[in-house]
Image 1 (cartoon, rainbow, N blue to C red):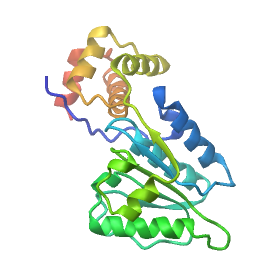
Image 2: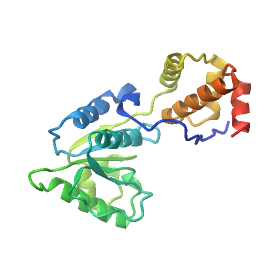
Image 3: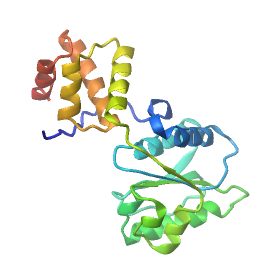
Length: 228
């Protein structure tokens, strides 16, 4: 059955507290400790895993955590065609989807990496990067690839279906929403199965159910989609 990717634009941005770690607890704890510490170690961190394992969620959560602390950071992903020059004011460098970087992005990523780890006024910056492959398998320029694998490396796993069901049930209960088994099956079979998309879907369903004063059922989901 074809899965539907959902882009509803209602959910709040990713946060570290909203990341459901499952088998990725060690990576989450590592990122949480770093983001909360005023004395941040400069050893770089690389996260890798399949799409839907939460790599981008963690990077965006760190960016938001830094913003809340009044700090700024550099951000680079494969969709940014003209990356800015390194900024001395940054507290960290965040690089997402490194496995997709073109030659110019690789060049800038390497420059960011070197500048981040070169102390300026005694303040080296943290580098947090993510991609779908382990460092050794990245088809990147050698000097960048080796640096990505130099520090802490965490392999992230996608939550299996029982875990996704458990999270959906937990989050529905927290909202005071009942999800029947048939609704759960419909959500998992017809929509993107990564947890971030499922949480957005649940938020949107909860909002739509409150607006229409109806319980969440398969007909309600279909009605919501027809009214998008």
